[in-house]
Each structure stands twice: as structure tokens, then as C-alpha cells.
Length: 349
Image (cartoon, rainbow, N blue to C red; front, side):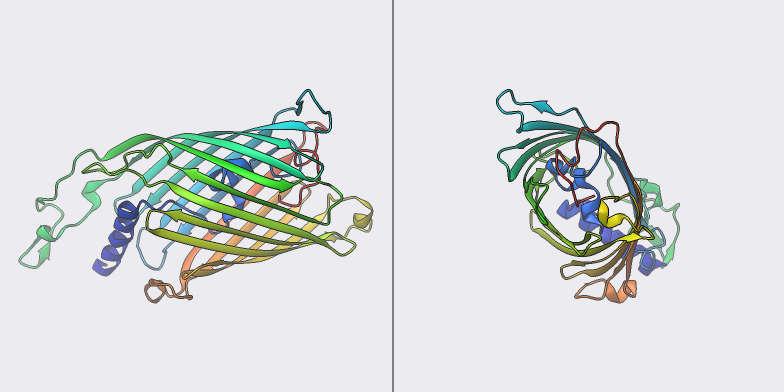
């Protein structure tokens, strides 16, 4: 138990010291946490999604649990007044996040809004920029922690006093992020792509519970490509992110193959409301190999993933290779014929 506790505390301390952000293995499924300019990259008028992550079950008696839910809604396209073929699409979003970690129930809750504008600049390209702003509340239960000076004659008692100083056990702050994206925008292309960059915590909020310590700015670079294959328009999708935050680096690369048209004879003729299976594999550099699977029926998607920490991970011995699992659910809906993905068919759902 003591070993588990020390390991858990080291993990919490690493997060606090480095300021490294919460993240998901299925990183491409929560666009507002990835890059606010990616909001609206889907077919339909709105998208609602939620994801749950459970991590370090074999390392800590209090596994780390993260839940996020978000909604994106496309406002009616508005013409720029010059060319009817070059509309601007506005997308608003709302994001909820709750994270509970370690023995002290170190908790972070966030409610954020996003606002994104997407504009076609010519027949082949569309550019987007997005704003992300949220309010964060956090805290921990110091009475659930154990300290060395609470051991008397080699015996531990939670009732023994400790000299460890604690100030405010709660922390509230505002958080601000910005992002940009460039994508091709022609519906007759068999290959579609996007690339973008974002910065979060640009207001550098103070997050420490002792001496003032500011959250380092998190920079991310995002890219994805999708190619249609076969008469059923199966999809081969590659996606990747590079994340930089102070002295922390995280690189993720994913590959998915979406197999369409199960039980639908007319799928190739344009009916794309059928059932699809999307297996995927994600590599988080020097940490984990992630196995993922998504099932889609009409507008509903469910997905799962499992982290295997056996690839150059410093904690793989303690975890036994068992890193985390995630569950995902999302729904895409249409309120009008406003247009897919800002006016073109979108393979990134």
C-alpha cells in the first residue's frame, strides 16, 4: 500500500511541477481541447460527444479518472458580401471537463466556450481561426495524504500532526486559448487534409497551491489526412499531434481504417447512413501503443481504446503494461441542409 501511495504521489507531483496538461489517448475525438479552430470539422449541423478515461488502475488504489463532454453547433453560413461561393461558417462550442487524480482526490473542473470562424479562400482551400476561454476550479483533500513525520516509532497514524504547510486547498482561474487551421475544401477530392496550430493558457494563470507558479503555455501542432478507397468509400485516416509545454514534449500518431457499408447494397450509390467499423492504432512516443475501435451507426458513434505501456515507458514495470482505457460516445445531427463540414463532405467525424 505504501508503494502504491508513493507512486501515486509522484505522479501527482509530476503533473503539478511540470504543468503538463490532461490528455486523452483518442486525442482527435475532443477537438476543442486539441485546437479550437478544429470545431465544426464534421458533417451536419451539430455534434455532441463525451469521453471517459481511467488510468493507472494497477499502479494506484485511486486510479486517475477524466471525463469530458462537448458540443459544437454551426451557425447559419453568411456570405462575405463579395462572392456567394465564399461563405463564412461560424461555429460555437461548449466544453466540460472533470479530472480526479490520486490519493488526495486532486480535482480539476472546467467549463469553457469556443468561437470559431471558417472561411473559404478559394476553390481548394479554407482557413479557420478559433478562440477558447474557460473557467477552472480545482482543489484537493489534504487530510487524505500521508507524510513522513506522521510515522512515530515506525508506526503511522493519520491522527499524528504534520509540519507540512498547506495554504489554500482550492484554486480558481480563467484559461484562454487560440488556434488556426488550414484545410482543403473541395468535395471532388479523393484526398482531404487539414493542418493547424494552437496555444492554450496564453494568459498564464497561477495554478500552484503554495508559492505562485504559472501554468506554462501549451503549444500544439495538428495534422490529419483522409483518403477514400474502394467502391464503398472506405477511409484510410492518418492523424498526428505534437504538443510542447515548457520542458515537456508529447508526440502522438494515429492510423485508422474505416470500413463502410455493412449490409447496405446501395452504399456505393450515395447512401452513407449505414454501419461502419473503424479499427485504429495510436502511438504515443516513448510511452504507449494504443489500440482503438469505433462503431458508427447512422449518426451515432461509440468507441473504446486501451493503452499498452510497453514501449520505452518509465512506468511500464509498475503498471504491468496496463496504462489506461477510454470510452467514447458521440452524436451528429442536422437541423437544416446548411451544408456538410462547411460546404463539403467531411471524412473527419
